Amino acid sequence: MSDSDSTVGPTKISKLEFNDPLYLHPSDTSGAPLITQKLKGTENYNVWSCALKLALQTKNKLGFIDGSCARFEYEDDDIAESVWTEIKETYDKIDASVTFNLYQNINSCSQAGQPLSDYYHKLNAMWRQFDNMIKIDDIVSANKSFQEHNQFLKLMQFLMGLDDVYVPIRSQILTSDPVPNVKTAFSIISRHESHRLHSNNSVKNQSSAFVSKTNNTSNNNSGYNNKKKYRNPPLKCTNCNITTTILV
Image (cartoon, rainbow, N blue to C red; front, side):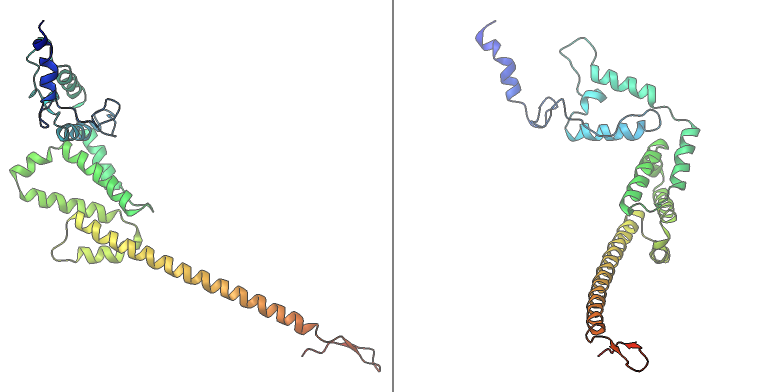
C-alpha cells in the first residue's frame, strides 16, 4: 500500500460535511442515552419508537435504521436496521384490550392535589401514546375536521380531572366563544394557579405578621400587669385582719 493510499481514509473522514450521516459531533458519545424513556413492551412501543426516531433525526442518524443510509461497501446486513426491524416485529402489536386500558386511564386520570403541570404532562403523554395507537395522523390527514373534534375531547378530559378549586375558571373556559384548545386552556389555568398561590402566600405572610405582633403585645401587657399587680405591698386592716392588695 502506498503512502497516498494510506491517507485516503483519514482524508475522507476529515472532509465529511456536517449534514453527512457519518459525521460525528463531539456530543455524540456512546455513553450518552438518546432518550430517557425505556421500552416496556407493546404498551409504549409507539411512543418510544417515535421519541427515538425524533432523536435520531435530530442527529441526522435516522438513515441507519430506516435503510436510507446503506452500507454498500459490505456484504453483511446493516445491524442497526436489522435490530430496529426485529423490535418493531416483536412489540408493534396492539389489540383492543391495550387500547381500552389506555383510554380508561386517560378518562379516569385526575389531578388529585398534584401540581397542575404534572397532571397536564401526564395526560399529554397518554394522549400521544393513544394517538399513535390509533394512527391519528392518518385519520387527521383524511379528515381535517376530526382534528378539532379530537382536541375538543382532550379539553373535556383535561377539565374533568381538575381539582374543585378550579371550578370557577373551568366554567369561564367552557362558556368561552370559541372554546379554546387544551393547550390554551392549560396556559389560562396555569396563570390562574400562579396568581392564586401568590395570593395565598401573601395572606399567610400577613397572618404570620399579625400573630407575631399580637403575641408581642400580649407579652408586653402581661409584664405591665405583673408590675402593676406587685407595685404596692399588701395592706392589712388592723380592725378585721383582712389583707388587701391595692393596684394602681
